[in-house]
Amino acid sequence: MENEIVYKEELAPEIKLMKVRAPLIARKAKSGQFVILRVSEDGERIPLTLIDWDPKNGTITLVFREVGATTKELGKLNVGDVIHDLVGPLGKPGEITLYGRVCVIGGGIAIAAAYERAKKLKEIGNNVVAIIGARTAEQLIFRDELKGLVDKLYVTTDDGSEGIKGYPSDVLKGLLESGEKFNLVYAVGPEALMKAVSEVTKPYKIKTIVSLNSLMVDGTGMCGCCRVTVGGKTMFTCVDGPEFDGHLVDFEELMARLRMYEEEEKLAIKVMEGCGCRS
Image (cartoon, rainbow, N blue to C red; front, side, top):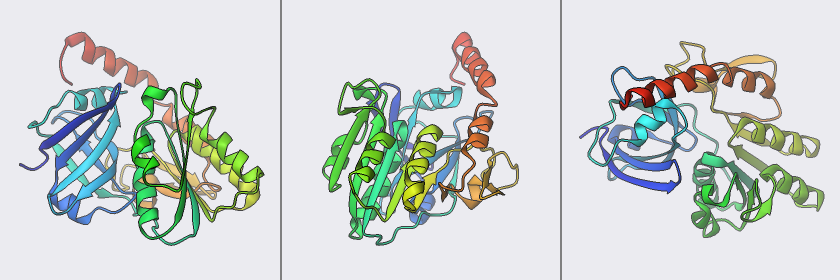
């Protein structure tokens, strides 16, 4: 059945992985693209990055954190349940080419997306260094998969419970200051992390690509909700991105826009929890 959940796994507290039957999307998907889904008919539309896809079996893999009302609702679905609607693949595919030596950085839930990109870059012969970070050790996902894939893996945690205490951008800064060379840095995760990474690489003139997670509604460029300023020009994350030159993104504006609906999201969660319903 289309949009049926065929596999579900808890990767860490509040972090779920789901494989969903979506053969048309699986046949067309490329690295860096995403889908937009609604859990129920009256639910909101949310974007989720494609972490993997299997054209042969007709499935796609999604990873999400139960942080808002909709992701909490999605997390309650089980194998055999059906997601109401699913649209994709959306966005421009990322550039997978032979750069030479690359550094892939992922923070929090976006470690999953960093793993996907590292895998694709490694498959075509790049030397790949990965730096991942999370708040605590129990929030680190895809750590073992990355360790067996990349040429070198650095792990950071905010509280020092595993790896280096600090942030991925601190490790990158240290590597560059010690003379390490990269032809590309790819960063995905919280906006503050991508901003910090871009600031670290800018003096070295290293090509830096970031994958933005803007607010979205339709995913086709019609609503304008996901607009972001890149190089002084207004762009739409859903159709012009989600990947952009990190040195050109106006991160301050982006972060301000992402904070616009914090109170509404909190209210939505209270309503959901208060009524004991799934939506």
